[in-house]
Image (cartoon, rainbow, N blue to C red; front, side, top):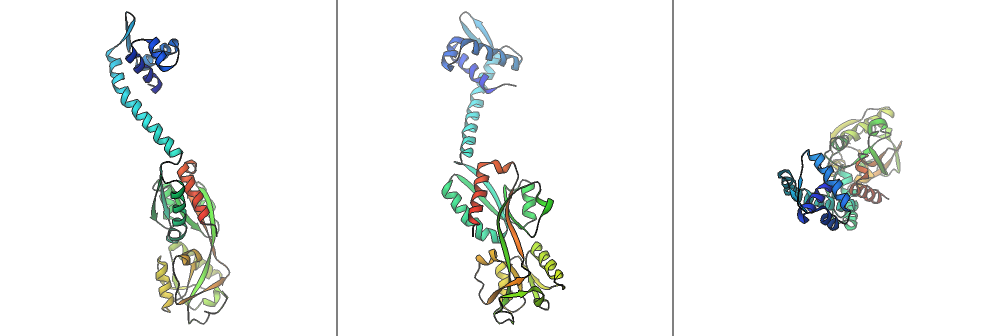
Length: 296
């Protein structure tokens, strides 16, 4: 294998015409130059220099290597500088995927702070709910996934680096004129006869589990991932719902009342990445700023 340091020595010998002059230019000894040239010729499998009197002359193979060495060394220098910029957070790219209520609350605060601290770091954002967002991370389509889970994910995320951010409580949503609108806390069973408006598939599954634990199967008349649509349907008296408090931060729930539900339902908000990616400076900085944005 041809090494970059050997190419630098070959260029110096070609430019100066001798090992001793190349050694002076490179700041090393003449024997060191001689050794590196022998190593390069061994790698190339052919002589690269011939001695003519007191000077060294390139063979045809030596001329080919010198001709290519300039571009190789220039490209390597550029690569080293670019990597150093990424390592020093003067540059870098992070592909972030988030569920909608995270995109409208945690993400803007985190990315504004990240841009202020590291203006050379670029972040792209795509919306996706788990488990799709987690699949995107594993498939290499993103670097950080903002996700949530109800209860423990167990081995589901065992291969990922998990940064817990916050615990998000779910609250009940009823129309303003509803019989339970003035209640502080309502048992989930008190809503057994109500029509329901459900959210994303994972939230819908959690709602069904909680209701079944309370002894009834919810009658789900509408299902939508759009939180303003959920609020609009509740406001129109078409059903009741449970929504994460994080989702309510980004909308104005006019015409509805929020109530605490018993038993309490909570989801854990986390940022996920691959273990190796967690060591990349731009990814680590994004995780840190997401954690700061989650402080409530």
